[in-house]
Amino acid sequence: MNNNKDKVLIFDTTLRDGEQAPGASMNAKEKLEIAFALERLGVDIIEAGFPVISQGDFDSVYTVAKNIKKSVVCGLARSIKKDIDAAADAVKPAKKKRIHVFLATSKIHMQHKLRKSQDEILKMAVDAVKYARGKVDNIEFSPEDASRSERSFLFRIIEEVIKAGATTVNIPDTVGYSIPQEYSQLILDIKNNVPNINKAIISVHCHDDLGLAVANSLSAVKNGARQVECTINGIGERAGNASMEEIVMAINTRSDFYNCMTTINTKEICRISRLVSKYTGFVVPPNKAIVGSNAFRHESGIHQDGILKERTTYEIMKPEDVGFKETGLVLGKHSGRHAFKDRLKILGIELKTEELDKAFDRFKAVADKKKHVFDEDLVAIVEDEVKVFKNVWSLTALQSSSATGEKSEVHVKLKSKNKGFEGKASGDGPVDACYKAIDSIVKTKGELLDYSIQSVTRGKDALGEVSVKVAFKEKTIIAHGTSTDILEASAKAYLNAINKLMAQAEK
Image (cartoon, rainbow, N blue to C red):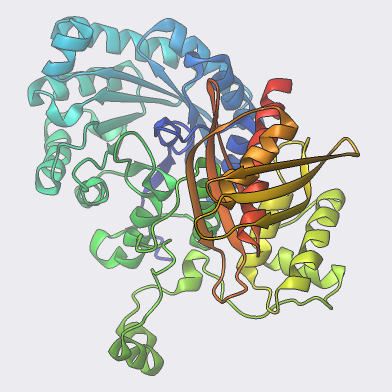
């Protein structure tokens, strides 16, 4: 690593802006697990949420602040005292804390949303920053919709909030309207027209409405921005945010061009990408840069020949640099508990004794059905068995029959509190019949909003992962299940959704 290169701070907003993506809601334990993963990744700042909007959001930010030690923990606030108070209280336990204050500065927002003049907006911003600075030393200010704001007013408000105590000024392309040449020029203009800009870090926060969030962010880095706000897998409002893995690997791979670096542990990228995908229910497309399943696969004969002769002919990054594990035979049905535990440790997974027992039992069951057990299978087993909620219902047996042109019949056996229950149902296909049979036992009818399936590894005996989004009256739950049998995986996913619902109700 070249220590002469400027460091670009990585500000991750997966838990705040990322969670605003429709259907991406996560519970407090899931958010904490992602926060720990972000800390392992080496993220500089974690924006943990918007504390004032609900007690749940406040509690999750507070929990993250209490547990994270290395990264700065940030809470978002509008430029009003009650928001700033909530953010300050939520991040209070953090070893390193920040309050992120925002206020719209574009004409369209000031006239139609806020209905205030420039002078009123300026006073609100300055007062908010001063008030926040009285609570913590690390203050970030965002002039919302900066890319569509009048330049002279934008320069003026940035200068004044820095005077008031802002240590970072963020320049949001809130609606993804800007293009790289224009956005990079805006950063340069801010540097040239704000007299005290050297007293604050310039940050950028770009949305992907035109597919330019990463390009805009990187163009800003080239012109002096030294903090990038981004999310894992690029999730977020509407079309999403700048993708953190793409920002980091672009800077790392082309440090010769950007003349800067990050301190992200890139080998953790794939692991956290999978975790966020699992908890949000958003499947990563196979052609997604850096973390997609096809990102390092080569099918063309010319490409394969080139790779075999010299990897750099067609690969600009090593798969292992972003955490892709080589898919090899690692364990089988004769493997012991010690070998299983050791392999999980190599994969970066450490479990408590009770969790290890559950995962090992499931591994042995999978190994009996599957000739080859791969690293990806092990990760899926752990994710499926070691949940962040208590199992109320579990599947003990499942039998189905179906024929073309006829209704499918499914017989399900479940267990709850050491008692056995049975249910039968028919439906339009085995999954529909299975879910109806489960509903007849559990007496909690859910509406299936989304269902997807993907193989964890390759081959006819691949472990399949089913993801479901289920509506239970006003609650929407995302859950997953894995098995070499797709109907069994489907049943487990639906039961996991029910168990999640019951865990939330109990809380």
